[in-house]
Each structure stands twice: as C-alpha cells, then as structure tokens.
Amino acid sequence: MSQNQNYLAVIKVVGVGGGGVNAVNRMIELGLRGVEFIAVNTDAQALLMSDADVKLDVGRELTRGLGAGADPEVGRRAAEDHAEEIEEALTGADMVFVTAGEGGGTGTGGAPVVARIAKSIGALTIGVVTKPFSFEGRRRQQQAELGVAKLKEEVDTLIVVPNDRLLEISDRGISMIEAFATADQVLLAGVQGITDLITTPGLINLDFADVKSVMQGAGSALMGIGSARGADRAIKAAELAVESPLLEASIEGAHGVLLSIQGGSNLGIFEINDAAQLVKEAAHPEANIIFGTVIDDTLGDEVRVTVIAAGFDGGEPQARIEPITAQRTVPAAPALPELSAEDAASPRAEREVEEKKESVSVSVASDSYDSVFGDDDLDIPDFLK
Image (cartoon, rainbow, N blue to C red; front, side, top):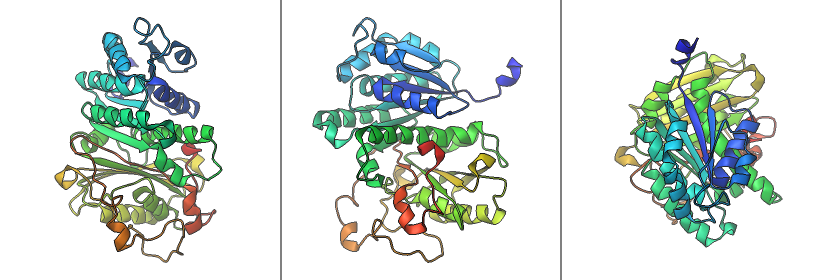
C-alpha cells in the first residue's frame, strides 16, 4: 500500500505569517484536498488557532512567540533560525506552495527563506501572495514590494494578488472582513486551480509532470480561472479565464498553456472544443497546449475553466490592449468599457511587468460580468464563495 503511495505527487502548502496562515485555514475550511498543510508563524497564539497538519513556531527564541512586529528582518531571522525544522517538514514534497500576505514581518521576511529551502530539496516551488490594500499604509506597501522582489528570486513561479484590484470586482458595500476574506479566497483559487489538475481524477488526465513542464523555467506566467452557467457556458468560462479585471497582461504569445475544463457529466464535446479553440487562438500558434478535463457532477450546470500560460518571448507577457472574445454578439456593459487609443497610451496600460523571475496574475470570475451575460449564465466558483 505504501509502495503505491510513492507514485502520487506529494504537494505541500505552507502558510507563512499571519496572512499565510489565515489563507491556509481558509483552504482547510473549504476542503482543499490532496495536499498537506504547514503553518509557519512567529505568533504562537495565532498558530494555536490553525488547523494545519504541521505547525512550526519559529518565534520561540527570537520573539518569544509574540510575532515579528511587522519587521521583515525579524521574520527572516526567525525562519533561518529554524531552517532545519522547515526542511524536515518539507522533505518528500514534489511541489510546494508558499503563501503569505506581503507587507508584514513574518510573511514578508520568512517566505523567501521557506521557498529557498523548498527549492533546495528539489520541489517545484510556487509562491502565492497578496499585496496589501492601500488603506493598510505606505510602509506595508513598500515592504510588500521588497518582499515580492526577494521571493521572486527563490521560487519557480510567483502568483501575486494585488488586493486593491480585488476592490474593482467587489460591491461598494463590502465590509473590511469580507475584503480580507476575498483575498484569502483568491489565494485558495490560485492553489486549487493548480492542485486540482493533479489530484482530481479526470476524463482526460493531467499529472504533475504536465504542470511542471509549463511552470518550471518558463519565464513569466499568467493564470486565469473562469466559471459560467447556461447557454454557451464553456466558451464564456474560457473568456473569463483569459480576460478579467485582475489580469494586466494577455496570454497572447504564450508557448506553454495548461488548460483544464471541469463540468458535470452533461459537458458536451463541442462545448469543450469551443473553449479550447478560444484559448488556442489566444496563445502562440506553436504553443504546447496541455489539456485536461475533469467530470464533477457536484458542479451541476456550472463549467470551470483554468488556464495557466507561460513561456513568453522575451520572458514577459505583452500588455493587453484588446479583449479576446468569442464569435457572438454581446450587449455593451458600462462596467467593462472598451479600451480607447487614449486609454491604451495611459501609464496603467503601459505598466511594465517586473523583470527576471516568474510573475503570475490571477483571474477570477466576478459579479461584474453579470451585466454582460446575465445572472443565469455566470456564477462565482464555489471555492470563491
């Protein structure tokens, strides 16, 4: 029995610091399967409240379990002081997700240390982090930028979720608690969008080697997740996966694309074809498209599409100018205006993607699309609720 288990990819999710541990707790609460959870923190009290499989109190000596006081240097030293414990917890992993809320102390300073250890044992290492809301202050913003830059140097791929952009897909009445919960849910989506491809049996299976071939050493990457119901559900979900308010770049020119389509047993072959064709047309003509389909009757009428695109010429994706749409007529939506030539020349449209290591944007289906397709057509994936 143990011999068979050796053939399964071992996936571990490490939450570092308060934000990372909160995200791990959310993943456990919502039933993310097939992974082992590890919580790393300098705050002993917060660590006690975690349901993670393994809990590492790295602040026993340095902070006496009272936290890093929003000082990344304290977080870094605490993680390095307990490097052997971290390595022991990560041993045997094929893939390690390092999740954190950038801007504080333990997550910002400790996450790069955890990622370095994960890579040193040969694991495919993926960072999934948030950048703070503007209302959290300039100091946290600046520390977050430095933390992201350091983490990029230690991971294979980095998924960065700017919390401010989550506000663009949120209702004006959203509470502060709901805003932070939304950030946790997007971190969950970033992890689950990849792990489900490996751990959930499918009609057309993807395995760890497929994911690794796209995400290891392929330069910058983009990830999108879309969900839709009703008529044209598959192609609408594919559109949402490649076009979202959270995506700052286009998948156009990607040489490697990992595509997963999830739906009930009534998912049609032509629906799959239409969705795959849309993604194929958006990528490079010679792109290596790795395709998987998962049949899950608990989704009902919902179809989910996950796209991971990487391997761009020059190492970075191109800034998106025009949206990718299916061949059908859609009513204009005030919430999603077309980008004019003047807007395209704005600093936001010309914003450069940071150089060197892999930078990933996350796309999620949002209520703002309801004005385009109607409430009956679209839905937010269950793992984002």
